[in-house]
Length: 545
Image 1 (cartoon, rainbow, N blue to C red):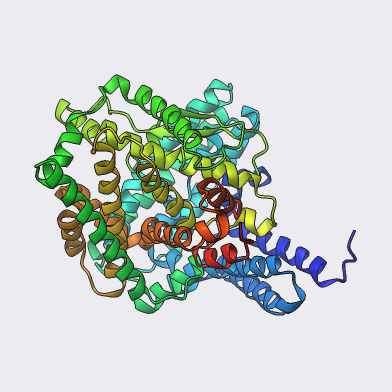
Image 2 (spheres, one colour):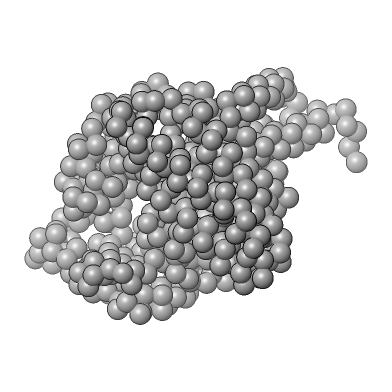
């Protein structure tokens, strides 16, 4: 064993301390990574609690800054940067974005039991015990929110917190049902008895006292937005440069869509109309999704796009009831530290039995065959599930197994959609490409809306019009996308990450990987999920092919 006085060994110790400290504030993140020693833990979100956390984070940052980069191996210099961002990112949320002072979603959104209900990683008794511990803390967390939130609160934040909070009783009901199957229902029922009234009181406080005086002011502002790009993605480039890249991608996608429309002798809107009319029946939605999982897996192998680490099993299920309001489809991936199973869970939201026939038809049109296949590419192969299979194999440092860049994660999956079209998926017609472009237009508009809303005074109405005009969305979904941008400026991550990967491919595929896509993609995924701003640095170290 290396002497503990050497710089590298001291750095190892500091790395562990930084990660442990992060998980004090974000224990649910640790659980999602597969670190189940954190099961059932809830953070202290009081002002005094987060002030103590921030002070300790400052100390750790000072210790990191004290390491001479020249005395660390090159790969550990990168890890030092990752550790810095792991601390600076939550500090930004606490001090600059003031998330806990102005966003009630931070409190209602912290009550999530999905990690314990979705994956069979441990006996039911252990998972129910974790559920009980989380639910037991709900009244405390919501009381901390009432004490800390400083009115006037941004109206979009209050509206969404009310919507999310309204679904929490159903979420707790699902936990009760899970516990009942293990004959442990009374344990959950006991803590629900205190949690649900606390939720009702918090929501009533938001609705009756905060909503009437809520403000439309939500923007981060240009300075904080620029800082967000750095603490999340290690990006120093001016956001105007990113905006111009997004505008160029939007123009490219629109031009290709217009070209397809001309070839089809059709209007652009009719292209989408044709897709929408071809959709699965209500009872065939999951069966169709399963068939696309198998089809896209075969496509990855046949076209040598990337290796598929085995075992690779991704099951398709209905989105749990508590997640249906905010999700059309999603992936619950295996965490990098989850040794129990590499299985993925691909959730698809079904038709609600309470919907009218018109509502059901509208939902199925949005999950038409071409769109559902594109979603499967994004969520499963070669998108998120393949990505997380590789992430589990990352043999690098603790920092690299913990760091999850939104722009790398979502950028890879969005890039996978374009890659599949480039390689001929659905080549028999334009339908697959039209679906892919429709989703690309959405992500382009998200990037432009994010920058506009938070740096340039764009209103929600103006952002809604952007999605309608440039993305070909109806008013309601366009407005929902615009509102999302008020509280989630990071939804720029899809296009930002995709463009970074495409740029890296153009720069390195031939010179470093002999033009072999599988070699390039495997190497890219072997990095883990690093901040997108480090992509060029990481690939520049790869030897020539």
